[in-house]
Length: 238
Length: 293
Image (cartoon, rainbow over all chains, first blue to last red; front, side):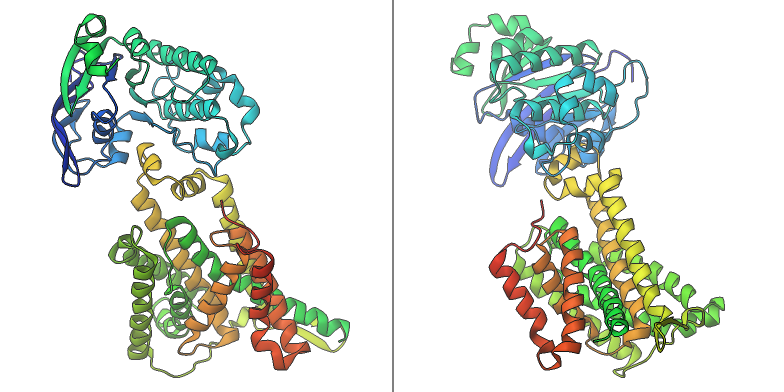
């Protein structure tokens, strides 16, 4: 693939939960290093879209290409191994593993030492975790769990990180810290797909954005244009 | 009871407890991590015992080897058996209710017993203690203790340490533990959890088979031997706390002590002592000694 080709190219994505048709043909492209914001009210299909891209929704249709490889029918672990890391809603920290174990359990060696996210670099980014290394995941605060979840994702050396509601339920100071880290991730050349309730901040951090409504893309384009679009507030119900 | 007899009984109870632990650890592992109640686990112990008996002449004829070659061949077969069973049957059980798990794995017991009957017959067989370990060690002035029983204990301790190491110190162990709480997240980190579970299951089967093989020379092999072990192993799992490996170790050693000394001191009540112990512990700690998690 050429350097300008999108790393993620999803076309005409449909998804179902049982008999309910949730996604009705969504197109999404993410370029190398690009930050894309995914907006929409609750229940409009954001998390379903993410779970479909990751291979967790088995009732799906459409074409998904990652780095030129067809992953439309791939299993979640195969998608992950192509360089996609997931920071899920609810954080997904393993409660019965220590912080250190959570971080290293799925770590992969970096292809480029300078750009890679090593254990040390993750701890430098989240110094608060250094004191908690031997604590179990279940003993952490929400903010610490989120740091573990992001750190764990980065240690798989991804090219694309998908963050679903990364700041949900966190104290304002921690929220700022998480957004700073999202900025760091972007600066280190990793593409991100961000879902967050704070749409202003999402648009501020994104290159491009799309707004979902009932399983369809209602609005898409450069983040600044989406931010100025008069339809936005109606679509988000704000 | 004089000291030497006490020592011998203590060694016996240790050996029995460690052996129970080996079988029960697979049971509690498969339940704790995969959520499957595997009634057929005792059958793997039985298969091990019969392998030690039936494979020995075949291995001797093919490789010219003795007991240890039989152990190796049996272990390889056990891993293959576990892998195939997980693929063909158990992988369909993870999302199912316990009743369905119990029905299917009980069905497997019947299949295994019937196959055993067809292939090896229904007789009781002894298995020869390997020459290398056939001796006895002097204990006190008149008593001796068979080397083979010490060998059983040593094998069990080595395996227990190996399991502990893999579980608590390796990334493989971390992945397995993580999988027991959040399968989807494990997959999203690039780990093929189906394959991982197949390997864990195969390991659990192999450990039970190995326990059966190693125990065969002291217990002999007989129809229904698996069911007897299964029941005691469930007692171990319940006392120890379902899913807890550490609990299984403590409970198995405790049962070894109570059962062995019960037979010496209270022979009339020996059959029920283990269950009385279980009842008392459950009254004290309804979730068992160590709750997993």
